[in-house]
Amino acid sequence: MLKNSMLRLHRNFIITACVALIAFIFLYAYMGTPKPFIKWKWMDIVGEGGTSVMSGLWLLIMLSSRPKGLVTRLFAFGLAAIMLGSWADCLDEFFAIPKEDVWDNWLESMLVFAGMLIVTAGMYYWREEQFTLNEHLQKRERLFRDHRAIDRVTQLSNADYLRLQIKQELDSHPGVPCALVLLDIDQFHLINRQHGQHEGDRVLQAVSHMLLLNLRNEDVLCRYAGDRFALVLHDTSLEEAQALAVHLCKMVRQMRYCAKEATLEISMRHACTMADDAPDTLLSRLSRAVEANALASAETQLATRGL
Image 1 (cartoon, rainbow, N blue to C red):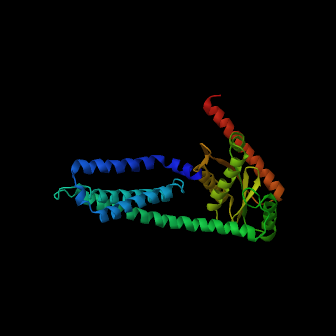
Image 2 (cartoon, helix red, strand yellow):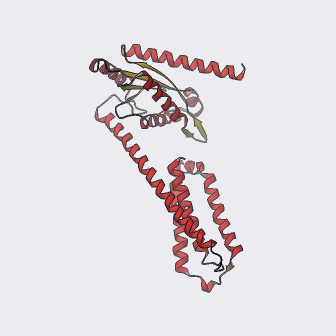
Image 3 (cartoon, rainbow, N blue to C red):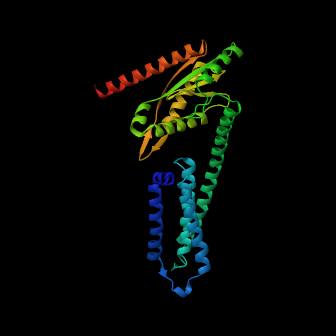
């Protein structure tokens, strides 16, 4: 089911690649002359055609397991170019192209070479992506190794650990600035209502992954309550916390979450404060600020619609 969902994301690219394969057949048939069966070189057909088939298979496997993004585009265009170049090379065995025409040699060589360059670039960015994912997994590992109170859905620290962490910051690092950020998913109740609690839990997990990927190792991310996440930012000013909160909301807004047949756009609102009071007082202050932001946003939308 997931594989089919992923392939649907890349449907236009797959259709374009298939059309290109068919177009190459018509191109060679129009520009060349069919070779008699006795002159077919089966070793070349198997080798060149097999390379094209395997490249196409790798392309489908890759597209069925990756969402849209830079790395996916690089791999897709690179493998598609190798597939088409090898396909053009294979068609040479079925159609005789006049020797004075060199376009087919350029087509075969440049497509394969360009495809290999693009795949190499994709591997470089994939390597960088893996480093980021490894950091993410290390953060997860530290959560369990420290025996923190864990939220069942997101596997993040829960509200009890959040309060404990705030208290420790105040007690252990007096004079060192510590900022708190509260993040709240917009209209999360509608996701639960329209798509069910299971999809709602998956949205929370996806958002927690995105937040973790954009935080420093020393930052503490917790699930505070419901659709709210809290950050404890050691040695961070209010301005720095505000900039980070805006960045995190931007990254979440760029997500495209696939829930069954629908694609959901997720957005968040935020509030920031300095850790200068008791944990419950600070969290109440942030909750009121987030709710005020939500009310202001709703009033703005109504005014925009002319209601």
